[in-house]
Figure (cartoon, rainbow, N blue to C red):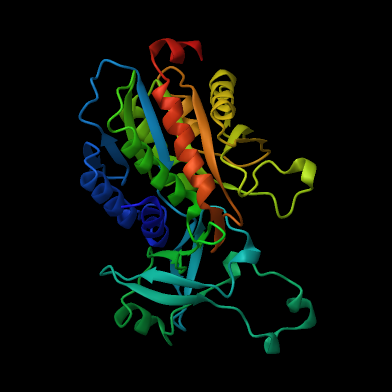
Length: 357
């Protein structure tokens, strides 16, 4: 399977936080079809890919991405059949209303719904200029009563809800449009990196990981880091592009400018020696790279770098416009360069190099 098809499948998959089953299925099938080694998942839906050639005596490189997407969960069913819901992950109130979603039924089917928006005809002048909070919003699935929602639609509280968006690719401009690029682009990058390294003679053992529930507190990574016990790690991310709203001097994550390596966010001060190694290697090989310092945000690098006595971690981010909303744009070349950079880094890692970080 080529990279674009893999990204399409992963983007279209429904994988709310804690309900990443479809992503797990796609990743495990890819790993098996490409003979990447043994693959398994745990009860939290974290996926582990371990190449058969891992000797068990070399330093361990953890190549990580999170498999969940910003999503919602049904909290209550109102008497009129609409669904009250909570956010899973960081949503802006402005981006949620009037969008189409999919709601999972108790027996595993998916029902179309709309985040209801009051018609302008019924809004006062003050209401027209106000944005409702998520607590004020409901999802309408076409039901007319609580009983119909539960007995006919078979939807109950605790049901996951995801944006309903279909992946597109504009070949002439090399631009992808879809949902969940944070972080299905990272998931694809983990799988492609493992594939590209399959026949390499490495100075390290590599373990590919898809961690669950990142959007609600990096929860999966607290498990995967303790299972893998890495000596060093690379985390792939779909990172928020800033090139359509920041002044030129402050643009640090532009689409079509290559992968972004983050020095700092709320979860981690990136190991400066490993960071410098990656940036200099990218420039040496002609791989475009960007750098950022962020006042907010966080990644699985947070829990991973604090494990196993301290772990050097870098973030390789694919720029995504309009992250944490229903739709995003990303460039295929940025994705390919992210994978290439990770592969070239790992090919140069050994015990001595890792200790120098």
